[in-house]
Length: 460
Ligand SMILES: Cc1cc2nc3c(=O)[nH]c(=O)nc-3n(C[C@H](O)[C@H](O)[C@H](O)COP(=O)(O)OP(=O)(O)OC[C@H]3O[C@@H](n4cnc5c(N)ncnc54)[C@H](O)[C@@H]3O)c2cc1C
Image (cartoon, rainbow, N blue to C red; front, side, top):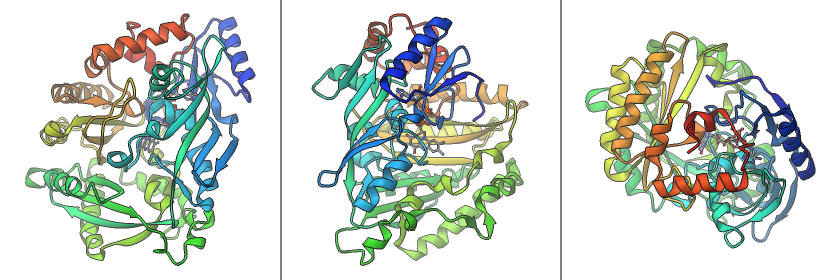
C-alpha cells in the first residue's frame, strides 16, 4: 500500500524448489522473505534486504471431500480458487477475509479472520494440517497432535518459522449461494456495539461500517451488516445460486467499467470529499434499514472491496503515497472508551480515517495471536509525503491508548508499530516462546521481512 521495495522474486513449484530457494539466498548471503499475493497492508511480505519467495505457483487443490468439506490444497491456492471450487459442491470457506485474493499460506501465516470471527474463530481454527519446509530444509507435517507447539506458532507466525507448502482445512456446508443480509443503521458507536452484542448468538456474520467524520453525539455512527446462512430448502434456486457464474461480481457499476472506478473515487479522496461520501453512505444506510432482510451472494457480501479493482489507487500512486490501515483489537470492557478516543484523537490531529470498520472477535489458541474477547476497529488513513510524519506520530499516540486498554495490533494491517509496542502487546511468555522457536528452526535467521526487522529489531 504505502510501503514496498524491489527484490529478486523466486517462484518455487515444489518442496524441492523451496529448498533450492533457501540455498540460493544463503549463497547470495541475503535473507529470504515469504510472500503470498501481497495483500497485507504493511510490510509483512516486503523484504528490502534480500530475496522474496512467492508461493503463488504452488496452486493446486489436491483433494476435496464433499461429505466432510475438507479441502487439501497447495499453499499458493487463493481463497478465490478455493470458493470457486467448493461452492458448486455445496461448501463455502469457513473463514474469508474482505478480499478473495490472499493465498492460503498468507492467510494461515497471518491467521486471518472474517466478519464471522465472533462465531467461528480465525482461519487457524479451521486448519487441520500444514506442511512446512523449515529453514533447515526439513519438511514437517504439523497438526494439533504432531508438534502442536509449532503448529500453533506457524499459524499467525507471519512467515518467520518456515514456508507453508500445503494446507488442509475445513469448509462449511451451505445450502444456497446466497446469505440473508440486513442493514441496521446506528446513531453512534454505543448503538453499534449494543446491536452486535445482542445479536451475536443468532447472526452468522456481523460487521459495521463507521463514519469517522461524525462527531459529538454521532461519533461512531454508521451501518451494521447482519447476515445469516440459509437453511436447507430455503433457497428454491440453490442449484443456480451455488454456481460460480452467479457469484461473479458485475463488470460495471452504474454503467462504469469497474476497472476504472478508482479514477472517479480519486476525485473525492480528500477530507471534504470523504466527509461527503461518508455522510451520503450514512443516509443511504437509513434507507437500507427499511428494506429488512434481502439476499446477497456470498461473494458480494464478503468481498465488497473486490468490486472496485485497484480501489487503493484512489488514495494516490507513487513514492510515499497511498494508505495504511491501522487495526486495533481491544477487550470488550475497554473497547467503547478506547475507540471513542481513537476516533476523536485522530480527527483532532487532522487524520480522519476515510473508512472505519468495526468487528466482534473471540480469543484463539495461537501463540502470537492478535485476537481478544472483544472488538476491533480498522481505520484506513491516507498517506502523502506531506502528512506521513505527522500521521506516524499520531498512530504512536493512538497505540499508547490501545496498549493502556489491554489491546493489540494485527501484523497484516500494520505499518507503524515499533518494538516497544510489540513487546507490550504479547505476553512475555508467548513472545519468549516464539523467539525460542525461531532460533530453533531458523538458527541463522534466513527468514526475514521488513516487518520482522521493524518489530523485532532487537532480535527478541
Ligand atoms: C482489501 C483487503 C481486505 C482485507 N480484509 C481482511 C479481513 O477481513 N480479515 C483479515 O484477517 N485480513 C484481511 N486482509 C488482510 C489479508 O487477508 C492478509 O494480509 C493475508 O495474510 C494476505 O495474504 P497474502 O497471500 O496476500 O499474503 P502476503 O500479504 O503476501 O503475506 C502475509 C504473510 O504471510 C507470510 N507468508 C507468505 N507466504 C508464506 C508461506 N508460504 N509460508 C509461511 N508464511 C508465508 C508473509 O511472509 C507475510 O508475513 C485484507 C486485505 C485487503 C487488501
